[in-house]
Length: 285
Image (cartoon, rainbow, N blue to C red; front, side, top):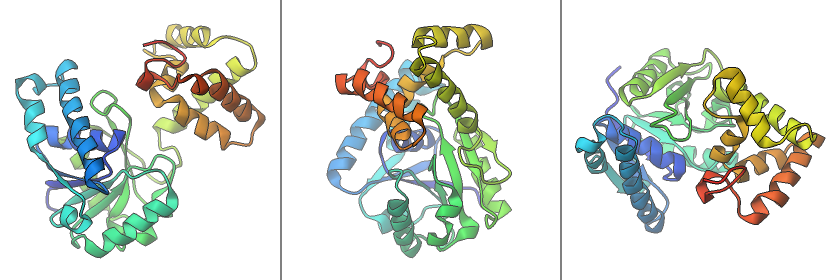
């Protein structure tokens, strides 16, 4: 299989913009697609901010012109056919809504070249939920990034029973070439590897606080000292975002999840404490 060179990222939100910038930073030709010029304008500002972050975080070569070269490697489009006309790989990072994703893949299948590989960055949906809408199930799989891709640089690769092994390997190779550490799953698993490990930790931390056993600072301190981890679970909650945590918890009918959702809403979200994005969540930043 030929090397993947031209990358299109569908969706320029927080993670989509990071995925696009990371590829561009490592020399790939990247097209950032979104629905209208207003969203694209916001994306350009987000990319400029990422260039500054790469320099501030001393990402290799960023301060020596690498961050600016990355910006030059990105083009923009609001036309799906134009955005994918020469794409070797399309990475879909649209909002986490099954029907929306199925709709975008139906449109994508109609305009993308036959050579193009499709990859979903979905964190909660399995690729088999979407494969029948791609028009090319053998050239479709999941490529899942963690937030702050330049720091948390894992890229989880997960195919379906239909995914061509050569396609799977090509995406693994792209992950490596774009500065990521590929995490290869042998079969589909909700939560991949990272969230299959992380979610039970976060749930246990929530139980300790909701049950009145310990406060967030004590839980985090215990985890950091006992395991050597750099962050405790409530610090992770702040990075993930308390709105995301609330949405997940409120959709879970278990009594624990409902109590945690209530705590998040009343004590944090209603007070504008949404995590690191707003400067305060469980901690002040």
